[in-house]
Each structure stands twice: as C-alpha cells, then as structure tokens.
Amino acid sequence: MMGRRYDALRHQSLSVVRATPTLSCKHEIVATLSVGGGQTLGTSSLDFTISCVGSPNGNCPCPCNYIADAGCTCRDLEAPLTLVVTKSQVWASYPMQYLQSFNYKPYEAIVRPSNDQCSASGSNPTCGWYYVGSYQVPDSQGFVCDCSFTDVWDTTLGVANEQRTRANLDCDFFSNPLNILVGNPPCSAHCLMFDPLWYSVSSDGSCIKFEACLSIVQIIQVHLCDKHVFK
Image (cartoon, rainbow, N blue to C red; front, side, top):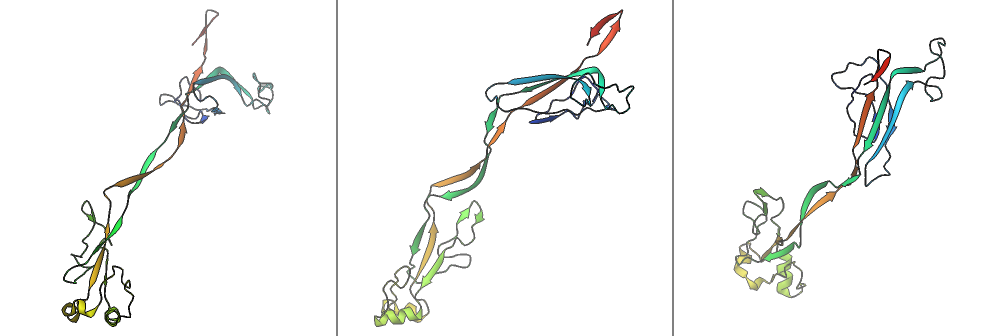
C-alpha cells in the first residue's frame, strides 16, 4: 500500500493490509512478520526498511534490470518504507465465569405427622417446596414412606425387621388401629434441607496478552534547487 500513514495492528502475526480511510490504494505491499515473546517484563522494538519488492535473493536494490529484462519481477520503490514495530510488556489475564452455587451440607429431615397423612404431590406437600427467589425447584418436595399392608401384618405378628422402613416406623396394627382401618397407616415425609452456607463455583481461564504497535513511514524526496528535502 502506497501511503504515509497506516493503522496499528495488535496481533502476534502482523500483516500490513489496510490503509487509513483517507488513502485510496491501487497497489498493495503485504509484509508479514512475527513478534517474539521473549521480552516479557519490558517493551521491545524492531525497525527495518523496505526499498524493493520481489527480489529473487532478498537483497535490495533489485539484482536484475526489470526495464531490460521482462522476466525480472523485482521492483525498486521510489519512496522506501520504514516499518517500526513496538511490543509492550506481557501481562496475564484470568477471565472468570460463574458456573453455579453448591450447598455446604444438604441433609434429610424426617417428619412424622400425627394424623398419619403424608403427601409428596399436589400444591401443599408435607415437606413443602424449595424456592430460589420466586422459582420453585422441581422435585424439591422430597418423598414419603408409609407402612404397607405387608409391613402392618408382619410387624403385628412379630416377624418383621424393626428397620424395614426408612424412618423406623411402628407399623404394628395396634399402634394406631383407627387410622390404619381408614387407610391412613403410619407414614413419614423425608425432606431435603440445606445448610445456610453456600459456595459459589466459577471457572478461571488464562490468557497471555501484549500489544504490538506498527508504524510505517514513507520517505519522499523532493528536488528543490539541486537540494534534497526529506519529508
């Protein structure tokens, strides 16, 4: 790109491919270079001059005569370009993203209603619902256990394991015969409870950053009274 000013780029691999809006380029020169990362605590700079393009051996001025030789692809620049690359010191960035919160010590609470009526469904379960703000957490109402007919029969006859139920319910028929006869055997509700302490968990990323500034200067010779004036 033939011009005097170019935008700075901030990538490890720099390519001069875009001019400022005030320039209208008909020909472009693409220069690609790498910025080393060895200098981490301070700034470093690199400058070089482009005085020809397409040189077969990388030397300038052109080793071949492109006026007389049609096969010569090298061209000398009328106004050489000086490129200055400055790299800042390197710094580390640790982006943090919140994932979710975990309770310190969730536990199970057992409720034994005196009327032997337990429910884990409907709008008013025995354990109630757990809410986060106004959001009702699904399946937070816990579950219920009750004495089955087999539990009542075996316990009454003395052949049942005392720890057959989760809450060690007394399934003996004579413990509450009226409720058992009307279909309300001993029951327990098992509720999910949370400790007041919660931990927030986040993920930490890592990124090494630095800034690279590219400056391009074009030197133009103007002949005035046999004197050279450089701009």
